[in-house]
Length: 123
Image 1 (tube, rainbow, N blue to C red):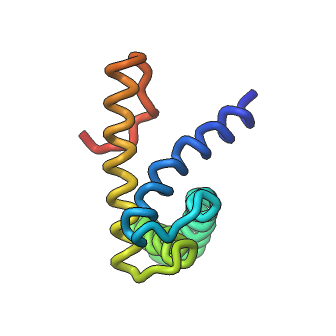
Image 2: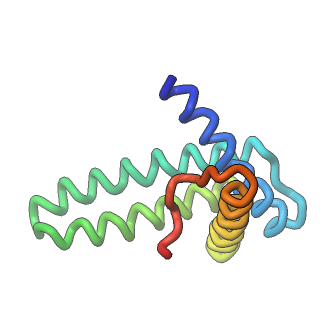
């Protein structure tokens, strides 16, 4: 049952990324690109984070977690950049617009069905 839930969540989270990709790329983005970016981004982020946190953490200690977070986010952006064939600024734009769309969808789901997404925003 958890696998089905993860697949459904993956599709749902890919929808805002798809629309953001369409907006930033001028309509030149596909849903497959969005799904690849969301899945690939998460996988690359965790691989980079774990490698940096483990290996650099053994050398410099706890500050390695901050470095791992930053490098993981840059790697995630690199996946978005490659998936949508855009610049770094375009990748940042896709992430920002997708986050705004997801925020609006979250508020709509709460207003209509009283069911929120898991917390993803800082306020």
